[in-house]
Picture: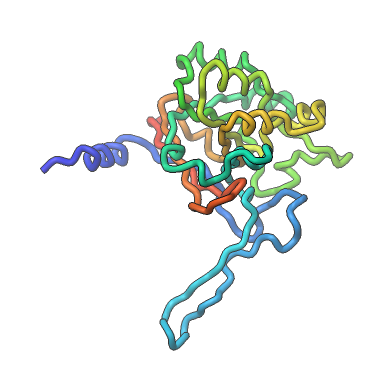
Amino acid sequence: MTYTLWDLLGALRADYKWVELSHSLNHETPVWSGIPAGSVELGKTVFDWGNPMLECLIQTFRFPGQFGTHIDFPGHFVKGAALSEAFGTAHMAYPLCVIDVTAKVAEDVHYAATADDIRAYEAQYGPIPDGAFVALRTDWSKNWPDMDKMSGIAADGSENFPGWSLSALRYIYEERHAAANGHETLDTDASAEAAKAGDLACERYVLAKGKVQIEVLCHLDEVAPAGAVLFAAWPRIEGATGLPARVFAITPMI
């Protein structure tokens, strides 16, 4: 017998590269400074080997929803908006478009990707398809897991890192009808844009549109700019504003 999906999976494994896009998590994983101390406790043994009831090991895990590579749901920034239970398996696979602004970030650590960057991408690779996941490649993930480097902490204590601009996000959502966006940095907004707005206005925009985003991605440099597919999965926990995510791409060889 022939089974189409099994044959397809074999072809995907043989002919394409599978790229991990999420960071590994441990007790050294940096978290936002506003998270209370003690919020992370990974792998605590609660049922140990040698128990006469059953020979096995059971652990518990405690962490913030916004921990490591994670997905944010609208209710994270918009009171009363959709939370994790509103997003199911249909929201776990997307056409992937990778917008590379690494050269501009190398010249300006505060660089905020613009709508013109998206248009330049489309001039080379074609229009962003409906329902796409648009990822911003800055190579900022190479600073992981140093929290000071991820935040771009300067001598004066200020944060300095690249990100999105509102013009870019409005273009991908209002002109191109993307489904989600992502980035390597801790925040959606470039630090300079956040300072000007006095808020994380870009993140608030995305979530207010009922979209999801995935933050703290990695290895976008190993993914083709166009033609790849992104998969994301997270625990099926109800009422969550965000959850750690396992994210990977299946990409044409580059």
